[in-house]
Image (cartoon, rainbow over all chains, first blue to last red; front, side, top):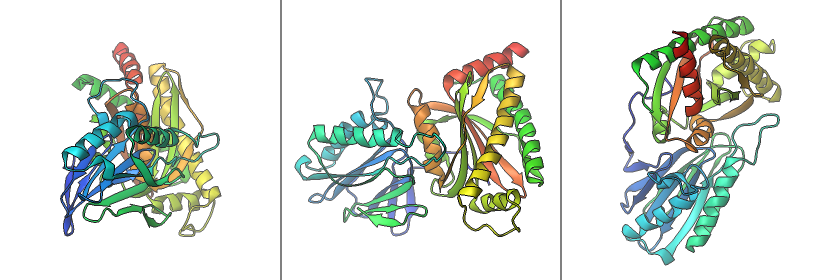
Length: 176
Length: 198
């Protein structure tokens, strides 16, 4: 079986009773649909920046790939921590969320490769730091995080409840 | 990044030959028949990379080589858990089916297989093109394929939105995948060498 699809999957996948919006690399996904979940599959060094308004029940995830845009062309604001956070906030507010109700949770930023002399404090950690700095600058509190370590993560945000489930390979399951 | 049909064909040809060398090495190391098929060479949108994976959450055992020198990029050998355990059995002289979980020794043996196979591939590429290609010491990972491939994608995404992916399946008694992701600058150098040959 091939590792790769020859065509890109649609972002919206049918999944059980609801539907799952997949936030791919550098993508921002927002939902106010109470039957939906937003997921990031196979996060390694990337960070899922999860915002949720528990009054309006609006949620969003930015799948951040790299820390600093350094003013590079912004065709993909979701790619960089410093541009993804303001864009995620803008889209959340547009979808009916109120900034003062927003709470942030973070997952990802791991170093999955292990080897002699291989830098463990690499891109994942810098992504986490840059994301936190951007959230702080925007005045949004980070209430929980599951970042760092040496394992990948898949995260699911349930829009109705705001529950954030994290699955791993061999490192258990948790809720943030 | 648009490649012409000729450029894609050149890349396919040179990587196919290098893969044939690498699969011979793999076959003699494992004393099993291993084939690496003709590679698929294509330009992919890095943002679509994870949705290109059949299932980014599939657990795999990976050996990763950072490629440096005139060719900068990422080389990955990805094995199913079952195949990784079989390789560990073969290399460490264990009865087939003994290894169920990989320990440090098993991972180290797998890293060596990846190292030799990857280096053989890169040497073939270097000999053919005259480029200086230097693999670094191998790293390993046992995790979701998406999380592992993301390491290479994040590095390439720092300077580009697209990349060329050379991918093939490893077939035979053990099964896996081979992935090469060169950066854009390296690709230009590689293509120039291939064109100069003609």
